[in-house]
Image (tube, rainbow, N blue to C red; front, side):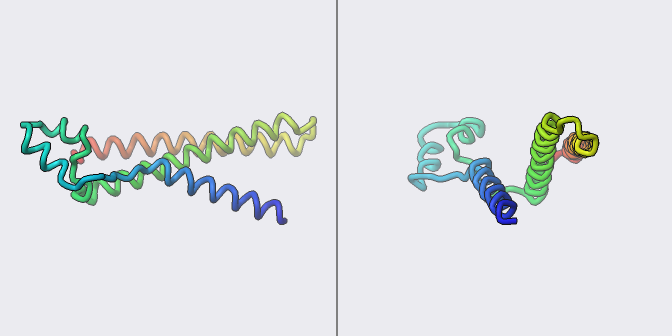
Length: 134
């Protein structure tokens, strides 16, 4: 029981660490750098965006919802691939035990179905985004 708790805790900590790394935050050493860049050059929006001079706080709700949906779909995909790897490992070490083989095959099938559904959901989200013009 204690090993399960430690394993779950380690998984949560790893997921939290991955979440902090995967979602970058914009930080600036000097607050008026973008204003100086705009004054000194006639930079277009692409140049300003490459320099990090975009207004991060001025995103729409639709863009935020799209980002959240994409992150959720990505998490489902990552979990599905992890489940496939774990089930494959269980299948390899089953030692011919038919119950373990059936459970591993069922786990692989469930993970593949979840992966296909996540892929289709991503396609639907991208189609809706393109249709609405977000």
